[in-house]
Length: 438
Image 1: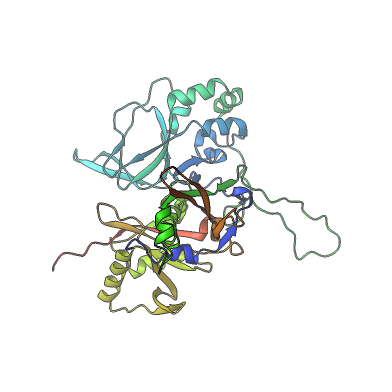
Image 2 (image 1 turned 90 degrees about the vertical axis):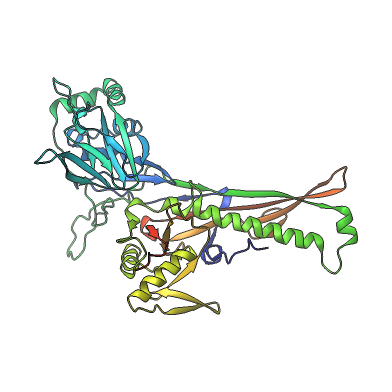
């Protein structure tokens, strides 16, 4: 069976029991007010803006009616653009607020001699169009064109949706009428809600009171399932079980296929897959196309606390090897269970053919910290299932039908969770194609 791979991800992830079929991740509330950038929360491939972060828009600075901010945040819609796509065009009416979730855009206007000129670059956390929140007597027009430079994800609030929210909220109407500023929320250097402490004191001073502020809607990972029905004719089971047990072999190959699908889902599923759950702040692009030692070092700087391993497509690993050879570098190998595995800075690089390669011959490289105690990436399963055959996998006899076919239901339950954002980093747009001849 050629479809069987090494499945390093399944072997390397620490597997945690998800009792009741779900695992809740309570995180510290993390955002920074006053830095001029909007912060987002991702759930798989879906993105939403943190309601309080709307205070980065100047007209909403200091506005603290949380139910109204929640309602306003819920009116933003997510859109994706490809390189070269125009988001807004110069001269058209300003009728939307745009929050840049991920990617790079150019703000283009008229140059000195009538040609186009880039007037600035917009990236993660930037925004434009906030003037619709306080419209003037005359409708505004865009002074520039905004065009996508890379693949871009944005959140858009139309003027009609904002007006509808405004009409329903008296406090928002009063705030925009005054257009005032307010104090920032106390945070620690990592952007988390601050925990008030006292140290170095003597005597009996009054100690500060505090509580650990968590995200209001913690993420719950529910176990996913991969299932199939194995059918074997009773004649085969009765007559041909020597020298090999036919049912056992049929079952073995079926389980191999389920495990391959399981690893693919752990990487690519839009809800819990690691490629979709890497935090936007933990994604970087290559500097020149192919993965260079500099790119791998920068990826290590994102997951610098106890990195466990890199995971990359075999062709991406080969591309990295070519870049090292071109620079006269020879990465060391490490021993993992008797296997010699290439490594960079002592961190092993494992292959996985489940990481996709795009039509433009680009891929991604993941770096992760693992383990529940390390607040890393973990696999989720549930053991103790009825008719359990392997941990998290059950084989249940169903019936024998009128055609004498024996049926077994084979089920695997699994998911994955990223406990804190800096446990997973991703190098995007990794070019794996060979360079042209000199």
